[in-house]
Image (cartoon, rainbow over all chains, first blue to last red; front, top):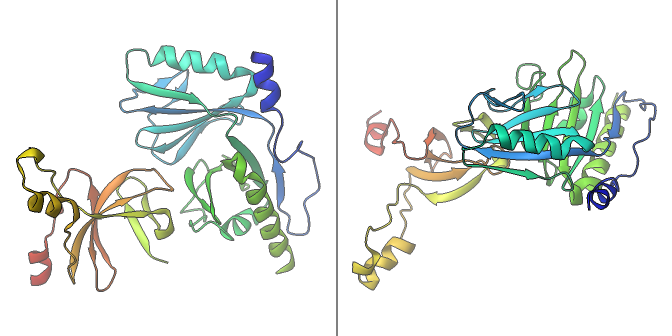
Length: 192
Length: 98
């Protein structure tokens, strides 16, 4: 059963990620590898669960690239981790939140990640995302659910001085979101 | 772009929100005691003021939470947003005096 689950999870809608050189816009758009994601809903979370910080401000992300947790609302978190760790992490979180009413659901099959980097990445995102992505409005470590064109995404800005973003969208939106970002980056490169 | 101040997320673009109609409508405690006119009034009859209106809004493509807002239906200006269950700090009367 486990083998079947992970084999289906690895069939990525955008294909295997390739390492390509950034085009003249300097924006590198790369589909992320298969990752496990969990969504956690709990009203009164306490400080942390499975060493993931739950008491951070709304619309921020904590952790590193291997295992991150984004707080999307007062009672909602999105957790990403390596694919093989999904079951163990879910069990640890559930054990830490034992006794509290909570919902922890594995949504790895639903989410697709796309990584964006480059000095002008925010310009490409702003082609479809109405948020203020400047340093003051969306500093490193920010994460929020928002819109990109017609699709709902979760936008995460990774910690670090150079802009690196993760766009998380639903699987059925993945080709649309990926194409949208590629066209937007193409426009950035030719506008200068 | 019209910005709406979500009580949880701060100023966000209008496209992330959904309007849920008039706010502060209390469901009758005992619907079976009402006649058809009173029940239909509760279900269907809403205020449609020219001026300040209390509305429910949902940050659907954001934190996903419902909240209330005072909006001027003439200028489309949001006077105030506040969480569900709270009361606004201003009313139609105080705004009319200001």
